[in-house]
Length: 133
Image 1 (tube, rainbow, N blue to C red):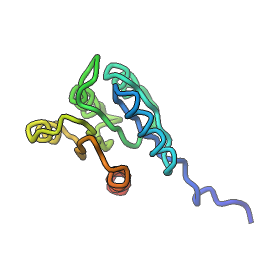
Image 2 (tube, rainbow, N blue to C red):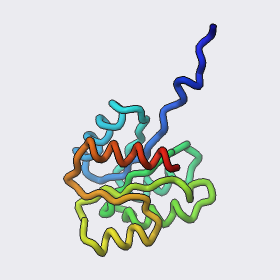
Image 3 (tube, one colour):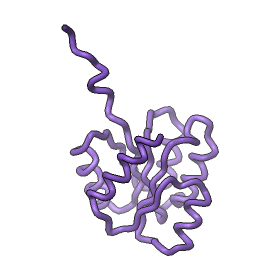
Image 4 (tube, rainbow, N blue to C red):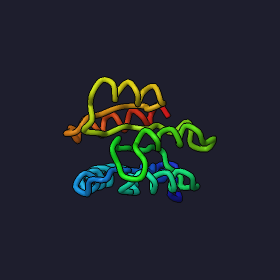
């Protein structure tokens, strides 16, 4: 019998937008050690550029405070695009005030996690977002 490609579907791709190099490195190592492909960007304008394209992102992780465009501005752009509006968006930020959380959810965030974060909890939340997507 030949190999069944359905046993190993392509790994979902996650776009990570965070201006902190060490956070990008941690997320890349964590996600790639799991079942995910990862694309890293360091500012909001590059994130918007990637979102405007056709790359098959299954999830987006955004920091709130980034140069070029904020995470909320990137989130707004995602929700405006027909081919992206249903993608889960996880906000991962050190800016964890209730007002920030409320604003992110009001603008369409799927989840909101504050830094520092538990890698195990983050992976659990990501897995849940993919199951409900």
